[in-house]
Image (cartoon, rainbow, N blue to C red; front, side, top):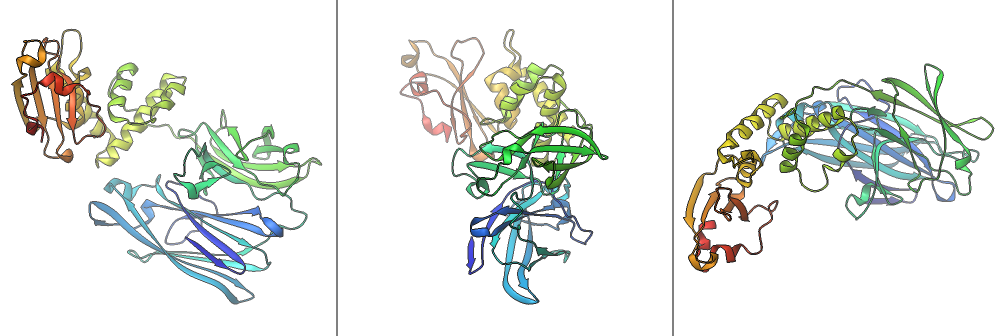
Length: 438
């Protein structure tokens, strides 16, 4: 959505998760961070990043979702004269009831606008319609002066290349930024943090350096290097938990911009299904699609891998509305039950049938039969069809191809995560009744 007035242009960006600066003690706990960047013709761009923790909101259950409506009354005024006003509604939805109580997750959003005249005041008035709780912030918008060559420092926990138009509204310079308005960086979630800097044209930003202080003592000193994203990647490394001041220092040792970060380090509960990490990874692959497990290969310690698995299972537990320990016991039970499919030296949970039983449980119906002789060189082979009433009424066709009791999944219906063998009709024969799969 874009709104234009003679003096401003507003675009709205939607995100997901936790963070924020300028937290105020009001009855709708949330965080707001206002960042200034240089714009064309001497104007200043303002980005207002904000997050509302889910635990701050009151949700109502509707259509298998938990929904909350937040109203924002935004206005710009100058010398007590209203120049712009808009009322916005943010519909916030989560899929599981435990998420509605989460402090670690929240609704993250961004408002962006450009101002070319001084002395404007922005007013933000948020209202949770269900609870009546509100958050109010009024702040003067100071334009970047002629002698201010660099904008404010924006903190992000992740910056990744934008390979498509997905999340296009969150992109800047061809990169997707996960901003952290709270400036809180969880060392268990991120190995690095990023500081985004933007300067006026031809300003020698790379001749500056970043310094980080804790308790007025210099603990890190970086020389800026060329970055396509303009976001400077800094390793958390051995930074201890706590508050750090950040200073951008110019060529004359003058402070050009300042900000802060808070490093959060909390020892996490480790909850894995297996003690053996190779087995844990094999089980993770059952539940992961796409590139979610790429990070596993980059982890260099067993403790880091165990923590990765714990976080993964924690997300799955939340989606099922279960506690982490309950979900781990649930998985262990399904792995144990899969011993029914043990085959020679291969454990049952590693077979195709074991995998499907772990993912979906016992089928609602099992159809057994034999292939036609013509399809298998005059040797009939046993098959099983597993059918589920839930799970989009999925069905799975297993065939004992080698006639040794190890059934292989050759075809599935209504499960886009499974890949069928293109030759499965040849295995089954011309007389196979495909309606059995419906």
